[in-house]
Length: 76
Image 1 (cartoon, rainbow, N blue to C red):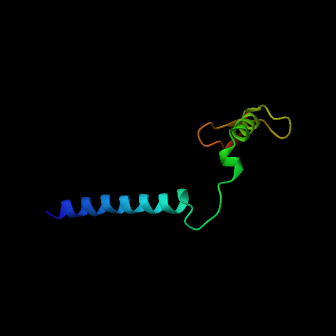
Image 2: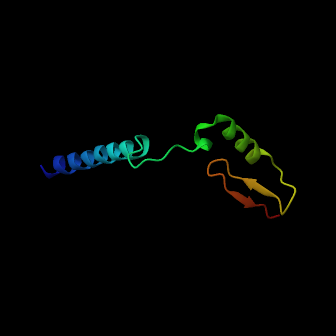
Image 3: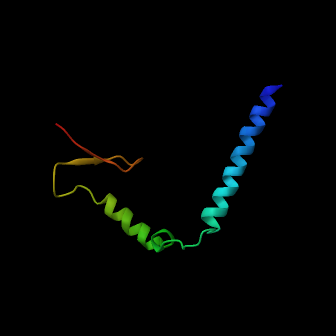
């Protein structure tokens, strides 16, 4: 019997968190604007080109992890 209350309260907390996130971030509850780097698709394309422009000419050779976009130094 307690399981249905636990599952219900967890589901309810997710709903409340989603509504709060939507109202605050998408609805701009506290003001502000969306940065142009987020809305400008050309900026995204140029940034992706920069990240994909390998190999780099300075420093040791690196390998880019495409999932987290972190650079790892290649050791022979």
